Amino acid sequence: MRAGTILVVCTGNVCRSPYIEARLRDALGDSGVAVSSAGTRALVDLPMDPGSRAQLAAVGVSGEGFRARQLTSELVQEADLILAAAREHRSAAARTHPSALRKAVTLRDLADLLEGVTSADIAARDEPGSWVTQVLTGALARRAIVPARQEHVDIFDPIGQPDSAFMRMAAEVDDALRIVIPVLRDRLQTS
View (cartoon, rainbow, N blue to C red):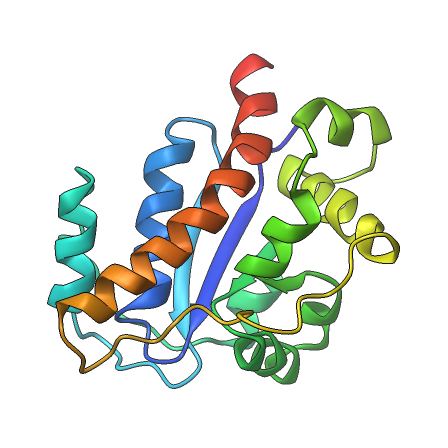
């Protein structure tokens, strides 16, 4: 089974999405999942914001070599899962290409949908497509029983703010990823 692809989206592609991308890539290791990011109004070719790099360094992950890029129709089409930092980014991805409507979700919404779900639960559904697609499909199937978050949906945007804002952003991301990563990783590492 193909592992799949994840595209992380925020606005400038220098703070939130590169942080999420680097954390996912590090946590998924050699699972085969390809992780990248882009911005809806990207600061193209700029490196990751020093605040995000510092938060990555604090957990032993490198942010070196990163360059921001613009969200394109091709990137949306190629992704199995589009992880948005905020609902506005999910909407922007859908405006970029209609296929995003069925594969874009905010990071926090995905975490809510996967709370209490294991990779075995997802595998038991035996859905077609990559493992990332199966995880997304399994999560979205729970929309009828998991109420949509009404507050604190978007990951805080720390751009231009002090270190404490980047710490807040990192904490919000890490809190969601502690739920999402095991579901994505466990099946791939045992198969």
